[in-house]
Image (cartoon, rainbow, N blue to C red; front, side, top):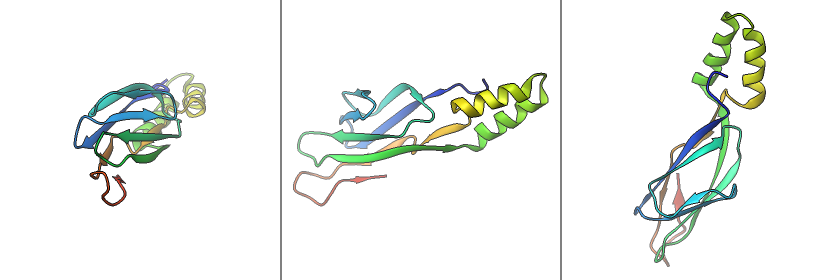
Length: 117
């Protein structure tokens, strides 16, 4: 496989030090954080929270990346490459999580709704 079936997923927040939880069951206690081995084909929700701030929720999905598509296409040039390109495409090696990194600005409690970018 050209790029593997998983990738790191990063979350940053303003202010830093917020808790991150995902619908995948992965998370971290404080931002900035990096979650390892997240499926490149995952679709999930991220919740970022910190005492004194509104909780922010964001959806993460995936799309074919230019690098991933190039890696799959390049595998055609090697012996047996057509098989490898089919495997890569089937297992998501051509995909990248979007957005990644996820950047979240938390609003003080009682302010307008929190904004996730």
